[in-house]
Image (cartoon, rainbow, N blue to C red; front, side, top):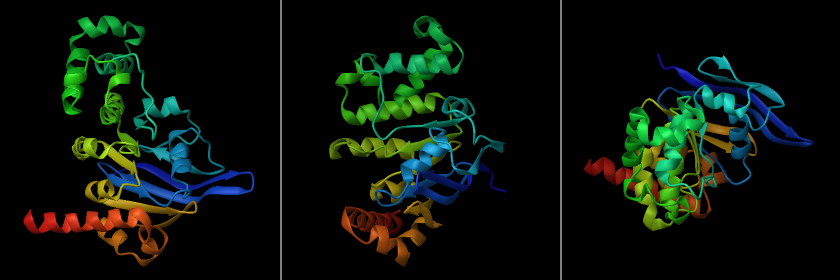
Length: 268
């Protein structure tokens, strides 16, 4: 039986007379590769802010691993296994990737402000940092200040930081946003190789990434869940085509992604 690790039930978020999310229900299964898509202004960011505790819902309930977390602060949700990356990366520009990861791993393991000592003397911290640096293709730049890194590397570092917190649920907020075309492939491959036991909710406009990564999708329009299904169902849904995939760059990206998927199926 599939386990639901994150559940949002009837979430409503009102800002004065504006309803940003309207009775949204979402179930994230263990090991999920689940995408949340929709046009600009659909309410995706509001929903993520509700899930992570940045906002408190007007109505509704959120459970993580069976525990009601609706009223918990963001840091309390992180401790319970829910970690988020941000659309605009938030990194320490003066620290190197190695220092940043050592700080994150040390704090997560309760070493507090002794992370500088841990950087050189704690074998477990060193080993975990080395694993993350290799996994996220950061070994060659591990001693460079973060501010000089290519943007794609900065995005990889942000996801590495999230994984250093050992999440059960990982919310990826537009991981390829702003990443130049030449740096995207490395990031796409790294996202695809995330640990299978981490349940991932991806918020993304890039249909190449969505259709190559997700096994389930939820479409949000005007703060309401329009539909949910597997990639084939979403790609062929007339309503989704009309309100989201039917026009603009997203439509072209989706068509190209579906063609690539069919080509891989024939040659795989």
